[in-house]
Image 1 (spheres, rainbow, N blue to C red):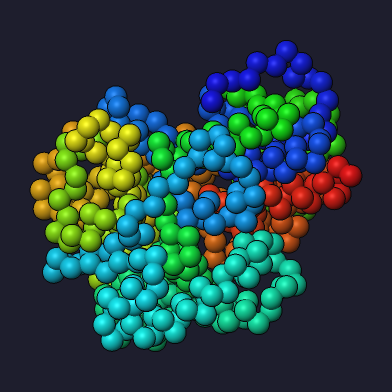
Image 2 (image 1 turned 180 degrees about the vertical axis):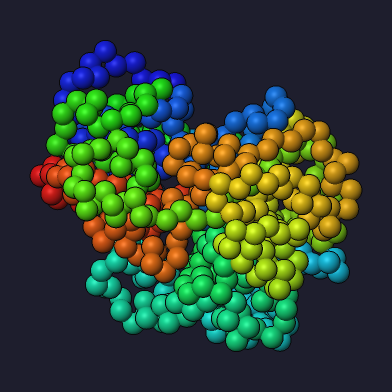
Length: 480
């Protein structure tokens, strides 16, 4: 999106929003829908934050710079209220949400149909149905509670059913519920999206949520690239009367014009720098003690041909989990959490051009993959990642035309919210899952100043709900 030229940037607004990622855009839209004057500042030339796309390798190859697959966006209680299709947003649903290949050339998959998925799991099929059937049936009931700030549940019995399993470590849950190593590995891959060691409490919550999403909305990609989701949000905001100012880095809140509310799509470390002495010393110390988690090390490739997977199922899924056995995935995630590296890292792979031909020149393809590494890691994982793909797709390296590498340091330079390469806005372990970054959640010690980033509930992911909840609070307290 081109910069908005505004000759009156210093005039007052009802609200200012800093950062045009999905949460900043969501916060701006919520306030603009209430007929308030809102200005949105973005340091980069384009909106999007973690939902940008670019030609990272060769001309004509469109890569998603950060997020690539959008089950949370498609199921977001807020985004689903918005007329985003009007502005060109289109989700593409591959035949399979996920494929998880193994060394013997087979793969387990997540289909939209829970029964069809369970039927592939052999003697674990019945257990899979028992776990997911009641959760899938009640998803529309509980998702508002699950994807919002902690509080009194409107559906306590349904939430209790989810919570009793979700609170458990994913390693122990998989070992208790499933008999086959392959089924355990499938679930471990889902839970590994937590960026946590799988022996930690509440990692099961991530596995359950992603499994539920596969069977309710699917795991879609955005036609033309993730940037189109951000562009649709921005276009809707501007149609509501909002202003977007790009190429504008806010170093200090003191440099901003007056407003009744300021909402910051930044992490606690950045807010401390921006707000300075306007925060109380006690609150500033709590923000400074906020913890960041493992990082992403990401590769994008321009390919001359589709990835030559041994398992045919992988050719029908936009998302592939590479990790091999249950034990290998558990070890990989333990290593990243404890400052170590894996020779065979667990990886999340996206191959959008199989289902969206506009992503690459005719007959050619794009591929996206990342693994988890310690925060601020400087170790080059390129060879380890490519060896892992070659393990399940012999001949993969022969297809590579060009590659782009994003280290944790590259991620933070690209987007200062990604501290040390942490793409979740802070570690989401049990102590920072519900009351993040402090017990105030969206509020701060300064009246009218709010956090609306993934460092607030419900945390990481492209869903806009951190911005949605922060903006609703600002409307109640400062913008009545």
